[in-house]
Length: 574
Image (cartoon, rainbow, N blue to C red; front, side, top):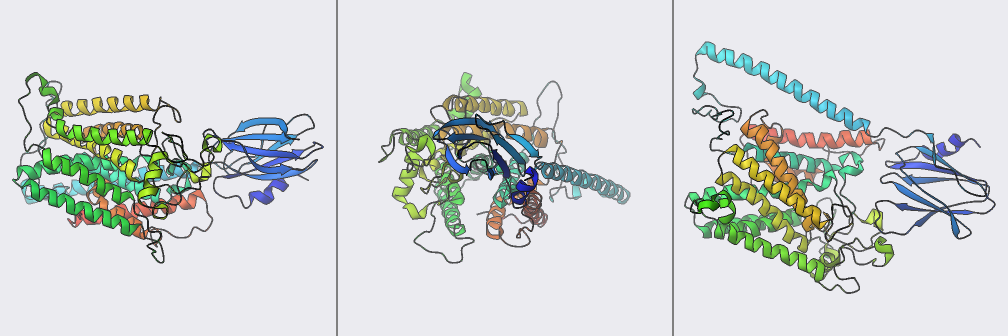
């Protein structure tokens, strides 16, 4: 029988992230085929097929991660090799009486990344076209204004508000850094908009690409970045907003009531959204934790601390220590944050969990050679199951597909909320730098120092590796190293955006700026409508191309809605 014809019968039904391996055996005995995903840390091989003597066996292989194959004959090792299979490829493996060949390619795999390249190029082309048309439009508009002799001070700016009579910010090249005039830090809104649009794209499916999905356990993907960045930006906004309200002579009691009200609304909306997409809600399995719940709780803790201890004006009484006035002004807040973080770390590493090793940080299931199958998340999972109940937390953890985890685990649980508070407060520190230092050089220097410091500490905690170290980088656990690593990236991102958008004004921040102005509306809206037309539909061919087009369309549609809201001067806050 011809090789390609035989495997083609399976190739016609291969789905996303699947390939076909065809094994040809000339051995006189049956051969057992076992596999192990390289993503599965400290796992055993598991059987996937049996090749008959002098037979042919086609096997459907998952291509998400590199795979190790282990062939056994008469319960003894026959051969073992690793291979990176690619989507829709057809591969062959020959078995003889003595050994097996290397895996070879029969039919080349699909170039699954081509749709991504086309999509990126298309968006760049559309952005360039938009800017060209905008320049032409404004050029004609300026000419008409000059002909009518209308003063520019009476016109509206690109933001829809009267242009400042003060003119552009003062720039003194070479000698002094840029002094930014008082007003909204646009780069924060741009950063927030980038996060919310990536979050929408990822939640819609991310084109079914594995790197737009959350990590099974340790490590980072694109999908793991946006939520902690969003919390970090929220922290920066808290610092700026509360300082402004304290300066306007609002009482701290009134501010605290506002914080409490907003937190309750966010938590309530989160619980409501947990029922989205279900036909009938049952109180027996209603999920309590969630994304908005974590935002609400983190906001409540951080905003309450700042409301109680933030000074309406920065202090300048530190003499030689004036260079760190932003830290000295908030030493009480930092003490509380350190206490909460230490509580999370101590509970994670030292809390006795029945039937599990103390300090266990793994996903359970097959991990650690199946010795702790019901210990998913260690102390974090145990506390959530104890307080919420097993039926009221997330039932399908991301580690399930790789580690065969059978125990429910919630990535937005209680212990992770304590480190998310640190996540938010590192954003508060970024905002306090904006309030305390008015020179561009001073701001970006301090942001980069924080970025380097947080990155080094995170690296030491995880031993600069994926699965080793005291505390690995883990989004499911919201581990300390994860928070510090993502905060480091956030400081760097904010620095770059600040230079490009606020200081140099090389980029207006559009279209992400519009999404950043109504981020909560976009998040709630996309959650409610994720299975509705025109945001999504049932794909016809089930390919990356179709899923990518649909998911990008959904995110783009929300970006357009954000633009309309902005142009209508509608900003909805909770």
